[in-house]
Length: 233
Image 1 (tube, rainbow, N blue to C red):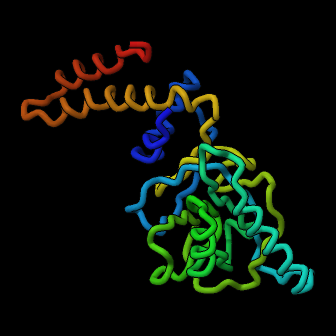
Image 2: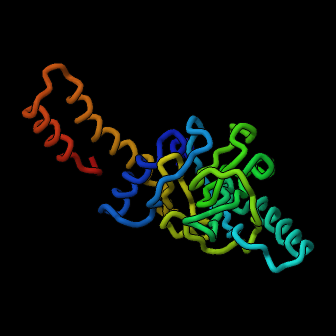
Image 3: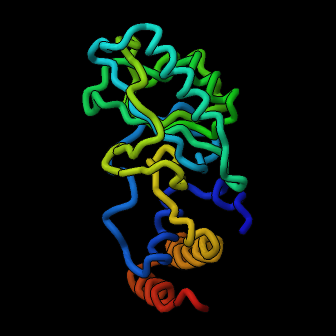
């Protein structure tokens, strides 16, 4: 498939297309809380999840040397790319959520992760340095804060839970200012067709609603036409 199409549509569109893949709607597979976007003008984040957990509310019991070793190993893990199709996406669970107090994401870490060729970051932690972070690297966070407090990496390459969405290492993520969804790998082949189908279906109603003589009767006609469409058409 042409992967470029995944970055030309927003995450709600991907979510709708996945309804077609499943054959029904779902209450799972997506984030369920609002996110803060570092730059809403960037294309959506698409890539393979590289996961980690952090904490900032308490000081680690590990020595500075041990913490430094974990951090270096974390960066090495983030930099390794096994999937030849997708770049890596950094997915970090802040264990202090829903009350995070220390930002892991600011000018330095954004610069490092961009330099390591990460495709963006999804975190339920904090974001800071808004005026200084690289504007070409998207961070989706839960909120904004001034301090890093005692922030440290606890573990990495592990299942995480962000905003009600469980994400495993190597899951395919699509995310933007609306939140994130997981794309099953076996859904990739049909997604371009499903995206086009959903857009065409919605366009019938949207186009009708913009006509000068639009009324309820015309809505019923457009609605019926849109809902008579089948995916195999």
